[in-house]
Length: 174
Image (cartoon, rainbow, N blue to C red; front, side, top):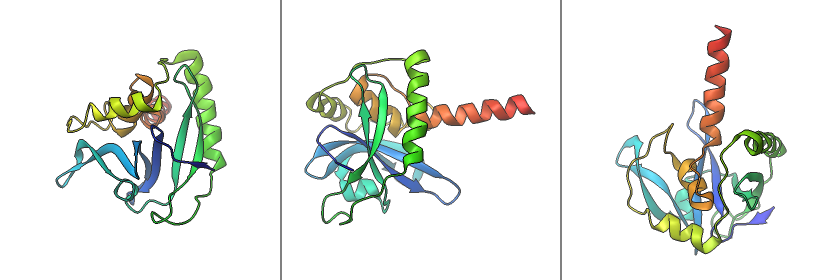
């Protein structure tokens, strides 16, 4: 397990009843996270805001830190130790997630876009430069696109890639 540090890309696992998903953000220090939040009652409208870690977690219990290589390739995910007072207990890792993301990272290394790796300060500065921005789009510009762009300069969502891959496989079978 690893501590959440300033400039880290983090995510929390959430369950919306039908399926689970990952919500991403940038740790901006002092138990704060910059991420897309709902704007009003519409789940598909969002604005980039800096909120407390507790609000970011929104009841989620599994929080992870994404690790990147120097070329901006996501290489691993580690369970995060949450600060006392947020949940108060260490979070257990799910090794299957790490294995799947590792396989995806190898694919991306061969076929995917590459960026660079911004320093923690640059990452947070990039995130803060977009505070107040609207424009959330589940498939084209979501919280994962935003957080990975802050860290690497490449807007990428592995969740969307996996969904599109499943849809393509289903279309080929039918």
